[in-house]
Length: 292
Image (cartoon, rainbow, N blue to C red; front, side, top):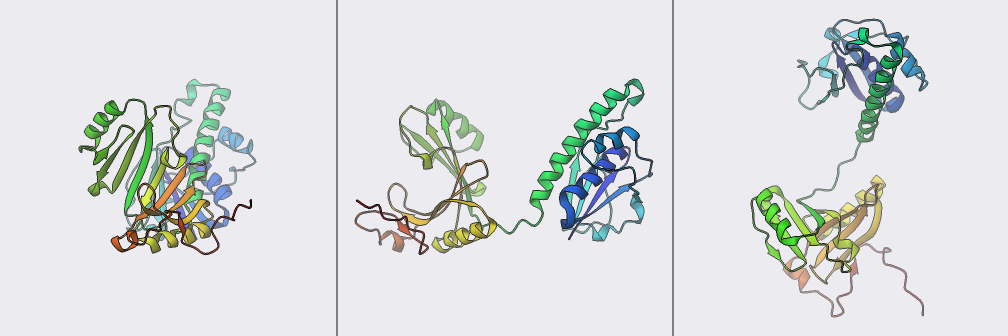
């Protein structure tokens, strides 16, 4: 179980809200603690804002930060003011959420204005914790050796000039329709594709990619993706047309294509079939034959 400490100082209200939201969203996956330099009563309007989404924070009791054993904390999240917290283990994650104090200058506001502020902060914290929840217990990913991205551009010469400046290198190669930038020190393989109105294969547009060591690494990535629950766009295969690759295509939650690939060795290139048809690398993943 992950042990998470929310540490607040002047921003006490945010700490209370964060604790309650984390308990709701993280459930049994985490032990949630909130520490305050000077524990204070819960603001009634903060209680009201949380009650709107079915959470009671009126009964929360907070532990003074100085008696919490820092060595047991897995994730420290500071709210409002980022400050040191001695005793954390090197492996502990440290995050700072610069959330505005909804009660600052509250004396100049009416109750409705304060409540509106509290709702905004509540929803911002809840969205951040939702991301945190998605990160807990993420399994180890595939061992990538480079990153690849492809984008479309309207003016290829102008874009090549811009990215040559930005990446501090000329493209490795280019044609009238694309330019490829390679930087080994950044593990970068970046392609500009011209948007000229001509049909382009969907695999070459708007996709990201990660380079792997070899054929077996691509196959292993496929099995890891299945275990993770990733969407498989195309199972592992060796392709020969264009750039010969061992490749696996995934889709992210928004449908963006991710190419997991490895370049072929000289020995593998020598095995290219005469018809250059793809060779599927995992038995049972071949497409069904088309009748007729």
